Amino acid sequence: MSLENISSNKLFGGWHKQYTHDSQTLNCNMRFAIYLPPQSQYKPVPVLYWLSGLTCTDENFMQKSGAQRIASELGIAIVAPDTSPRGDRVPDDPESAYDFGLGAGFYVNATQQPWRQNYRMYDYVITELPDLIEHYFPVNDKRSIAGHSMGGHGALVVALRNPDRYSSVSAFSPISNPINSPWGQKAFANYLGADRALWKAYDASELIKICGNPVPALVDQGSDDSFLSEQLKPEVLRQVAAEKRYPLNLRIQEGYDHSYYFVATFIEEHLMFHADYML
Amino acid sequence: MSLENISSNKLFGGWHKQYTHDSQTLNCNMRFAIYLPPQSQYKPVPVLYWLSGLTCTDENFMQKSGAQRIASELGIAIVAPDTSPRGDRVPDDPESAYDFGLGAGFYVNATQQPWRQNYRMYDYVITELPDLIEHYFPVNDKRSIAGHSMGGHGALVVALRNPDRYSSVSAFSPISNPINSPWGQKAFANYLGADRALWKAYDASELIKICGNPVPALVDQGSDDSFLSEQLKPEVLRQVAAEKRYPLNLRIQEGYDHSYYFVATFIEEHLMFHADYML
Image (cartoon, each protein chain N blue to C red):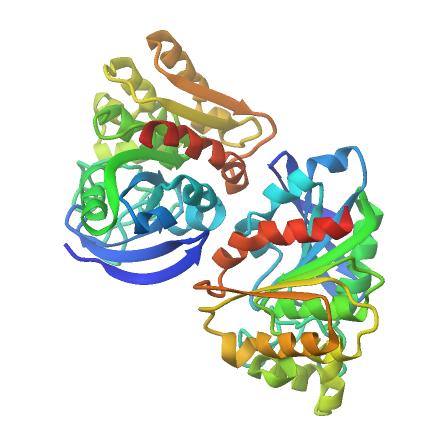
């Protein structure tokens, strides 16, 4: 495995860098971004993985969240992968819809044709990407994970299924119960097939029911999010967590919407939350 | 004069809003963005005007700088206009170059055909836009101005020529001596004509020589900015300011480039600087 550096910018005393690499998991060339805080020049630092939402790439969070300011103070690296496999040879939604195919990998391992050769973002995020990061960069083996919308779903699923690998998890506006949301149903029917029982392995509200080793979780949801009732359904997650006494802090933030302006407002609290478990 | 609101997002307890209006100065429909801090609900607040660089719109600074976090603490509104007149009826560079025409108004009042009907960003920024803002929003008459690259040039020129209207000025990576930079020479030759003596009215390094009523100025420049020596020439500004004992604090920031990652890193210090004069 090898990396190609394609950009480098200094910010808050550290470095934002973009790399490309040939992914064995996804069978395509992938780009990711990493923020290395100034502390990484002297010692290995923990890593927060950030999973973005529909239509995003590695760039949205890095350009819009302002997270690097806090990461530079705390000494935490941030890694942002892309949201799907990419490239001319990767199949896309026939209608190029924004909510399926390219830019919409939903952090699952697809089992159906023509998706299963490339759409394996779950394995990519859990194994190939951390292996790469821990091989090439001055980081230690402490990992946390966070995300927004589709990426909030991804972060919760990844942490709930791999509690030994992640210290903490947080999400903004996650798709909390995708098997009951139109976005999730469309994606899962295509990637995973018609058997809905198999979809539960990628549904945070279902996974909390069977989780034996909880990862501390923080979720923020804007009350004026236009996707709230139809797609996101945080009330389902809240109820299941309460029944299972899962350590979930789910906050409704009055007046905030689904945009990165919401993420920017509360990202400092999310990084402080992760720092409590990683540092 | 009337405004149409086209977007609204809550962030850091305040509101980011975009508006369009028919500009009498520019003879076209224009968009701008405003950040209203939470304090503006209870009292009029001062305004920082932000002028963006080549190719930008009102959105780049609002999405990437993180300035609203500090503005919400200090109680300062931020207004970001577009970087040129816009629309199908506005003439553009025949080759659609990024550094002239649409997205590249250079904050001058054009005197030449076919530009002079629309390309009057200097008057728009100094008069029409503040009149609109002070009529429609809960702001007081304290104004400061800042900008990046072409917008850093614009901010310095606007403040140097209108010291009674602005409390302070700051710039990131400004085009400090445009009459001696390829960007400035191309734009000024087209907008202002062949007589180079007339260009000096839009050159910060020339204006400092004749300024009788100085506005306090802060300038940050990255040492690894790829445009530094050919286009930006901060050393000219520094030398003229030193000769004239102008209150300019010009800082070279080691390792930083021309991107918004640089702006995001130091915007807090710029807002604190302006707060000293506006609050």
